[in-house]
Length: 315
Image (cartoon, rainbow, N blue to C red; front, top):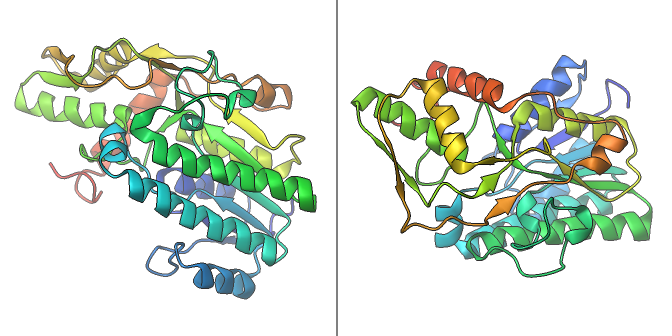
């Protein structure tokens, strides 16, 4: 991959897309393209196709998606299903139509069945039913994976899907109504520290989750960019998990909150365990580098530095 290859990063202002952009710049890539949602509506098929014909990117990295936590996914299943399908279908199909040879599709570990054997292997895809609270988002992402697989098989193009575990890091969403568990906890513990109050968290704290610092995810994307991966689907994660209770205690420690943690067991826990088998990616040369507490410290530092100008943080 030449350093002046034109690379379009869809969703370049989001947490993942911005991390990919920063990482590519650090590695000397000079021809990066990004468009805001106001400049390019990815749900508009004609607009996306015109954009490809005009810009002629050689590579597309699809980090664009409508995302949210359990509450948002559960309350707005239609939007999470339809909007994500519109975005990825336009990006993938237009890439095929305009002759783009390399496409990296980013998804989520929620594509795997709720009770799939642990750790989650790529071959567990579509073997049983999904977690109901985020089924819409998961189905959308599965169709993206399958579209890229079909193009790879039928047209012999280098279209690959990377499925990250739970991501967190700088430029995350800390809005309590729509954020994922780790940034939501950072926000809650920060507010509680300032208010000298306890923290109430959903569920029992017993489910186990795996987390990956977003800069590590960006490194995995660059690895896929610079290499032709032999298979169509790869899990991206640390291969380590932690209970939600232990996660909360780690975040509490980093933030310096002195109050109590109260668990609201009337609220849902979600999937009991989600750990990725990341052996396939490790075998071909990539693995994570940021440990969880270090990543949380970096994320909280960024949070503090951006409280005044980060639109999702309304303290």
